[in-house]
Length: 114
Length: 116
Image (cartoon, rainbow over all chains, first blue to last red; front, side, top):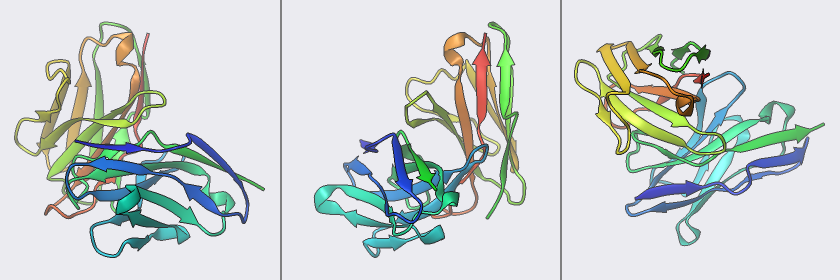
C-alpha cells in the first residue's frame, strides 16, 4: 500500500525567503515520488520526480527535492520564493516511474507575501 | 509540454440528472487516461484507468454503473456521472499518458461538479 502525507495545508513565506514544503510517504515497494504544482484554473504540472537515480532532484522554476529513505521524506525546497510561486503543491507516490496510478497528498497551498 | 483540456471547468446540475465531463489530449495521442476525484481538504483519489478501445478499470469502491467512462478515441475520454446526488459533488480531474510506461502524465484543469 502507498500513501503520502503533506504536513501543512497552507504555508506562507515572504518573497525572497526559503520555501519548504513537507512530504512523507509510505510504500511497500521502492517508491517513485513526484511533486506537482497547480496554478488557479489550470491542470497539475510536473515540477520534478524521483526515479531511484540521484537522491537530490532538481526541477523546474528553481525547485528541488531530496529523497531521504531513512526519513521516508521527499521535501520540496526553493532558496528564494517569488510571487509567481503562489500555487497549490501536491506530492505523489507511485510504483511506476511513468506516473501511472498516483497516490496524492492532500496538497499545500503556498502563499508568497510581498 | 503536452496539453490536456477538460470540459466543463464548472457544472451545476440537479439531483437525478446525468453529467458528462470530457477530457481531451490536444497535441498527443493518449493511450491511457486516468480519472481522479478530490474531496475538500482530501487527496486526489484515483477512480479509474481507461485504455483506448477497452473497458475502464475501476478502483475498489468506485461504482462503475454510476461513473461511466468511455475512451472511444486516442484523444478523448469521457466521465459520465449518472443519476447524480449531492454527495457526488466534488472536483474531478483527468490525466493522460501516451506510449510506454515511463512517460509523463499530463493533467487537465479539473471540473468542479455541484449537485443541488
